[in-house]
Length: 114
Image (cartoon, rainbow, N blue to C red; front, top):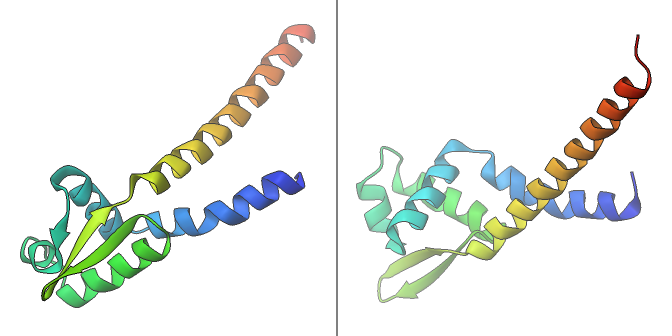
């Protein structure tokens, strides 16, 4: 593995770890679909406790996927799409590597018939 690939993997690992939980993915999908919401709004429409939602939002915020802003007594959370674009770019790189590997395999098989 090249140093650049190792560095990119090290940087991407926290992003994918944050996305590796169904509740966090649901929160991201919700904020993506509905726009900014308060903690009260999110917990009112969820089977998950307010405390659990707060914990998941902290993980997402640490990974850069969401940002919170205090408005009066409420904390309003919004999606930060830049991090999703970074995840998309990482997945595109991985997909490209697989496509290259499959193309090399195809060429090998065609050049070396059984």
